[in-house]
Image (cartoon, rainbow, N blue to C red):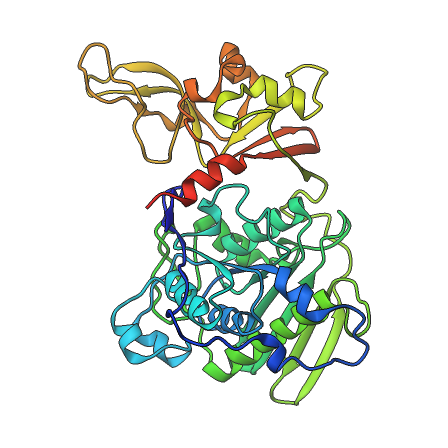
Length: 423
């Protein structure tokens, strides 16, 4: 099945081969020292998102699939190249066919664990709906794209989701795992450790694919520098990440705050260092937490003013802003005759407005200067009291209502279920 996917395909993977016997994790699951929970039950309900499904992320996804978790969400905008064969767990024919990494990883994970709910997003985390990580228990990050790292850190901070970041440095034979618990606003995030050059790369849209291709994502600019490493070092980083995930969810080993685990291949030494509090110069907002709520009725039938009231923002709408799914609110646009026309509708990225010019009868294209995401209540005017369906948002999955340092994420389970039935 394929969900309606915010500009990218969102594939819900079907089961494995009919009639093929599937071993259960209990056949090989050890009884760990100090285990105080039912490991089988914990893994049965565990839901993990893996952002980046390349040399490190694919290995993480496959290792998790062999634990047969409740759910896996796999996210990557990239495609295999022939050079991917040097570092990825793939066959030559897979590299030659240039498969989308997320869909390939998802199908392989589903074959390994047919009972796992596997969802593959062939796009970037930046382009996904705001609720994309809302239902997972933790997130594994395995991408060298600075913008993706920052976005993943922001979302995990706001949703208070643990984030495990696995990386390698090929020249020094270092495999590294950073663990951000995101239990409160005081902890660090990936953006806290960006240096000046990385911030410049972030501002310029540069990316660092580990397949060596140097190909930018669909929305990135030129200036891409490939990461150079080896398959065994990538696998080591993935194994360390999955080990820390398992220890965290099962309560194994000593309790730690945020930390970085680093294995240095030249010296054969592993060190664990606390990450410390977040930096005051961090690019990310560490204070705003997204609460979760269900709308009073399907989101498409709700007005934004009604959602603000349901979120508890009862002191007026002066400081309230709204983010509707992946949509942008277009105040105005231009048409073929060059005239600026009022739009006042929510529009998908790159789409024309759902109305035509009264003069030339051609589509009206939203003007970036008059587009808002998020959109403030003041910009909405009277439209803040109209149902979302009348404003162009016919089947929104989620709406974020924010005021100052507080925000509430409304998710529409009915819309998400209906999208999952689309093909």
